[in-house]
Every structure is written in C-alpha cells, then in structure tokens.
Image (cartoon, rainbow, N blue to C red; front, side):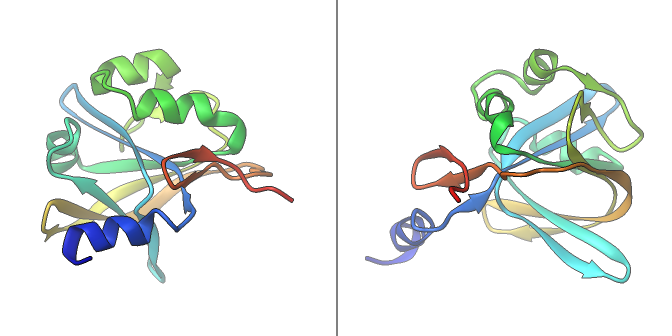
Length: 158
C-alpha cells in the first residue's frame, strides 16, 4: 500500500474530532464538516482549518474575511449529518438555523465555537489551509465530543 491508499487506511484507524466550519463573503456562504482543525498558536491565539478545494464551500472561504469553527458534541450528530450532506451550503445553514457574525455564520444553539479573522492561507495539494486569529467565541460544556471513526460518526464511551 502506498500514497493516497496508505493515508486513507491510516486515517480510518484514527478517531477524529468533528467540527463544522462556516464562512461568508458578500452573501455566499460556506458550511461543512471538518476533522482537520487544529490549534497552531496560543500567542497569538490561532487555529487552522483544512478545506478541500473541490468542496462547494471552498470559494466562500477563499474570499471571506474570517471563519467560524464549531466544536460538536455527541448529541449534535444531526448537525454533522446535515453539514456533511449533498445540500448546498445555504441549504445546510437553513436546515440547522444560524445567526450572522462578522466572521461567518454561527449555528444557533452551538455549545462551543470560535470566531476567527483570517490570518493566512496556504496551498496544501488538494486542500487549502486557512489560519485564523481567534477573536471571540463561546465555550460551553461538551461532555461527550462527536467523533468520526472509520466510516461514521460516533462518541466517546466511558
């Protein structure tokens, strides 16, 4: 096994936190699930989100001044299912409900999220890496994070 096949096989063995990442530019919205989201700096506070270039939402992220990262809990699996569906980004947001912010749509009732001002973008093959400065957000209690493992959503078992 080599290359892409090797990477897919490797990642199928990893339990990855599920996030929803959103952006908006002049009325065009981006909304999708993501698992490639990481902190890159605490001083200044920065996060990174990796967005596939073929994603319908990619153009909105390229043009937006910022983006929003939502950390999902196990009881928010319906949001993850909608955000990973074939609906358009606008239809996804309408289905879950959202409020506008200067940095992108915020899902109504989201337990934990960060608003980020775009700091930099990097080409990374078939993805673009978006780095943002944390501006504000909300940290609610996420007792059981939503994970993606193998081929589906799951949670942490105690």
